Amino acid sequence: MRNPIAKLAVAATILVAIGLGVWAFISTGSHSGVVWAEVAKNIEASPGVIFRARGTGSRDPNDDWPNGYRIFWRSAAVSRMDIYRGGQMYRTIYLNYDAKTTIGVLHHAKKYNKEAMSDQTARAAKGWSDPQGLINLALSVEHHALGQKTINGVLCEGIEATGPDGSTGRLWVGVETGYPVLAEREDMKGGIRQTGTMDQFRWNVDLLAEGIEPEIPTDYEPL
Image 1 (cartoon, helix red, strand yellow):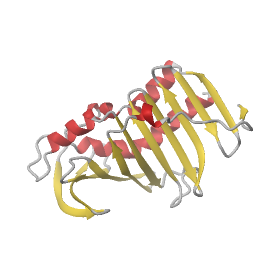
Image 2: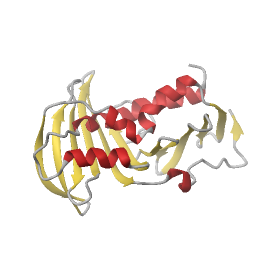
Image 3: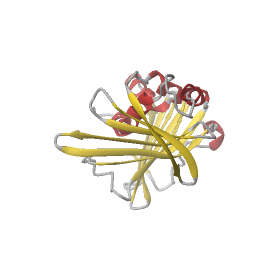
Image 4: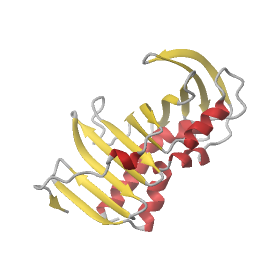
């Protein structure tokens, strides 16, 4: 793949996959205090969501663990991923599905690229850019309750399950809010233990009003 934006979009899809698996544990059959069917409805109805993703063991030089992380902004219309290293924004990937355009900004190199969104990029990125699409990714898997615990001052209830790929996932939902607060995933690949977390969620965000299209500094050069 010679197209740099396509490469970045595919990479983003792979990176966020560490978190997507935990959404498979949303089930309508749970008998816990949290009504999981309502959790699924809340996620599906959210027009946009912002969250942080972190991971270990991926051998990705951009991870910069434990300091590296990614901020995802996701909706059906626009999506953005900011990659941070050493506390500084390293890269930004922005996709506008209505305008069918993509913007990639390499802050560390002071480079950028703007172009029309290809069908390949749209297909690769749509899975992680549409919060409603997360429900479509849900699988019917066996899970068990983890009880309750307080996470960042929020009383949560969790479930844990093992996915078809052998990974273990845990999803913690606010008892009062009915929205996910923390998602965790871990597995073994090639003898390397990999972990991933999604947290710092902001639900029901109008991303179009947030102005998430990246501003390109005047001293940045096109790729």
